[in-house]
Image (cartoon, rainbow, N blue to C red; front, side, top):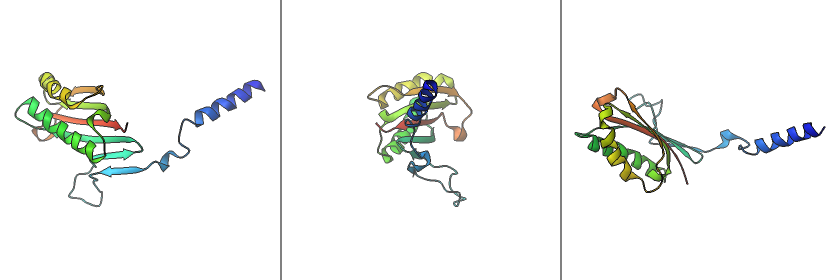
Length: 143
């Protein structure tokens, strides 16, 4: 009997960690793409669910790795600002690079966009669209 009561209490405690109805969380689209618009991009710039913002990948182009990094990170920052957030709200960033030799150049610029702890991050080699040097995407949580 005591074991069963402890199991029930554990289930009640675990259930209290999650919203009663997760689907009730507000969803907000930043620069939304729509299936009804066949000529537009087939994605939204970002989607906010509750306090979490999921950012689509943005391309970074430029003559140098530093210029391309600035281009992509300015775009990420702009999308964050539209959601009322800052670069310091990022908790995860993924960078896809056309040339892994651009790692140091990207990092030189990347460091200047944060005033607090850096988010978790991955830097991966990839073939990118439109002659981009980088594609950057991320996840941010409102602090």
